[in-house]
Amino acid sequence: MNTLAMQIEQLNHELSSQLPQEVLSAFESSVEDLKTKNIEENSIQIGEEMPGFSLPNVYGKKISSGEILKNGKMILAFYRGRWCPYCNLELKFLQERISKMHEKNAVLVAISPQSTDQSLMMAEKNNLEFEVLTDYNNEFAKKLGIVFQLQDFVLPYYQNLGIDLSLFNKNNENTLPVPAVFVVDENSKVVYKFLEVNYISRVDVEKLIQSL
Image 1 (cartoon, one colour):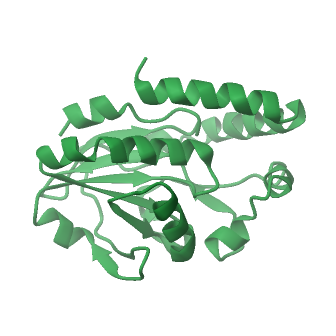
Image 2: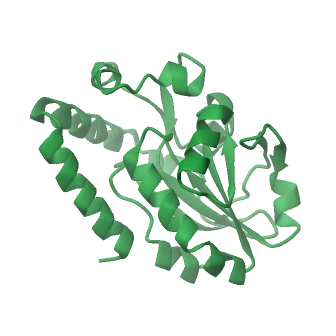
């Protein structure tokens, strides 16, 4: 088992002891419903061209895929938001391996629908040294086919935990990207893909680095 998976297992244990069974069951039902949406099959695939983007970083500066790809490969890590403990674990683990990515001539950027101020708080808290970009209204993620609507039955449980997506994302869509990681080569082609509708399952970072 890789190190990130071990940390996630520990997090699962902690949350299962802290959250009521009713909440855990609602989250599980949400994931099971997502599995019926065929997001994996309908999303962008290996070998296809990654659409270009120009998205603001935590300081509001636009970062473009074209500029990144001039210098090598690009790793895109889509996450749900700073409120998601699994996302924080994954991004911190990616940060710990950032030098390995640079050795392979690859640039990592993280993308979520949360506002730039939320991303800044998360980047500072986790000491992230890579660009953390805001994809307002999931417009870019929608092009990749990796966005879903959070179900009405699970929304109250999120809100009771203090997760109000309208505040984090500055809209009322209640849409999120599924956790996904892509490697894009200098020709904008997708050469590696990890996508999992179950937000508990995360990329094997060592396999990701091996793919570079």
